[in-house]
Image (cartoon, rainbow, N blue to C red; front, side):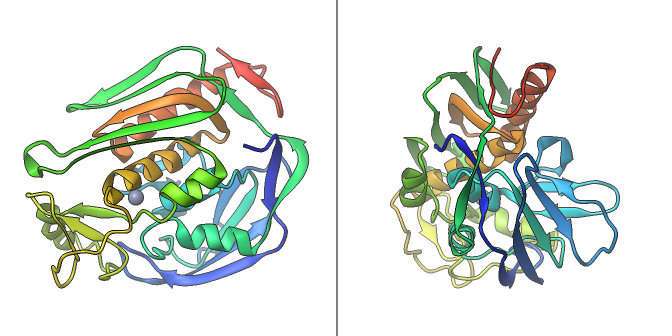
Length: 298
Ligand SMILES: [Zn+2]
């Protein structure tokens, strides 16, 4: 990845619909100076403070990542965060006219296209990075995430396994580069188990789901479309596990700096991903020598 911090050259805008609530929203990305980080701002809640894209802003991690505080929140930031991580963007103001990020096509594609439309530029101030120097592990209910030292960059590996809920089993791993992210991860769409969709709908969620922006995985492992329940045309045979890796990349970017480590996940989801991000974030921030452009070794 680049040694310099990155932002975009010009303001860009996108209009879309949120996946969970199905409400229309306008998203505007604005360039920011070096050292600002990524922040979200609700335009519909006048005078509310910007929300830093950090694990310290975490408000909810059930099925999606919600950031914010008492006054304002932003829901479903993970696919945007994956795009920012994949393109190495450090500084950005993300303005929204509603609480939920637009779903786009259920992957990171619209965010990649929007960032590219705004033209990602280097700011000639060294990028922050964090090289893990000790093993870290988190686990819950049979799911686990392990991070190991690896100074050359970020490697993400994942094993998808739903146990008795579905026979689908997939593994995927990659060394994260901008090109690799674009080609191998960025268009992998969100999905859920067919057995869980009713529960979502009971909770009033999934109102923005369309035939194209997501799919369901049946107990027997088959992928079907979410509305008409026809066989789904997948973008990759292993699109489900690639989407899990995309989520992991976005969630880990909530540490606010580029990560150098090998991360192995088994059955992990947002709640475990952010627990790892919290562990990493506290390691980074208890180290007083972290300054811009300085690598921290712990
Ligand atoms: Zn996702």
